[in-house]
Image (cartoon, rainbow, N blue to C red; front, side, top):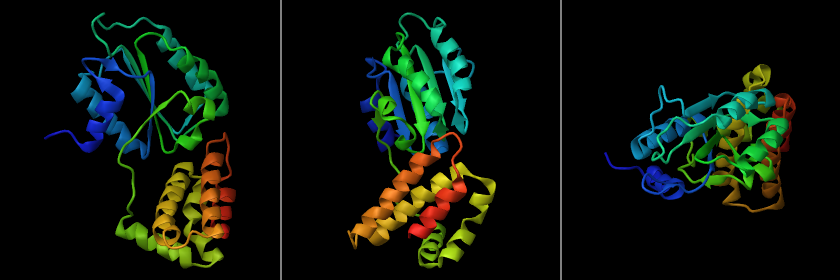
Length: 241
């Protein structure tokens, strides 16, 4: 099987086994599990990186990356690589998260401002908006195929949601609100935006249409904070429609 379009794009933007990596810190934006599996397959197949049992390959996968998680990463960064001198991959960190606390981002900044030699970071997150501008300015965003179409089931859900009363909209979001599900809330916002861009924004570029996309963008930003109120954010979006 030949390379996918995403793999070809990543090969151009990440680098090649012959030349090494072009940058020291990358951001993959989208659905974490899909991107994470794709990235690891790409690194194995293109760069020959050993994932399992490789002391130079480090992976963190969780909901919220906090300051306490940074200590082990910093310790591993400061350790000497066990790779051969001719191995251009060096130490590799794949950090998959739904959010990252502001304290952790501020502390992480120095590591990606002054990276050690042959150390590469890959951040995997649902949206670039969970990161501070100072962090984003030092990450190379990797383009990938992003979700642009909804399944029939999702299309029906969002059509019903859009046309429902305010009370019924909140009822449809009850499970996410009850579980305080930040991941579910982020997916809801992403797919609502896809629906609205196709159904509304392409037909009517009114001030109200622009406003709701701004509200969705703000809600994503609030989800990155330490303890966001999922209930308040989703209620606001449901009422804003």
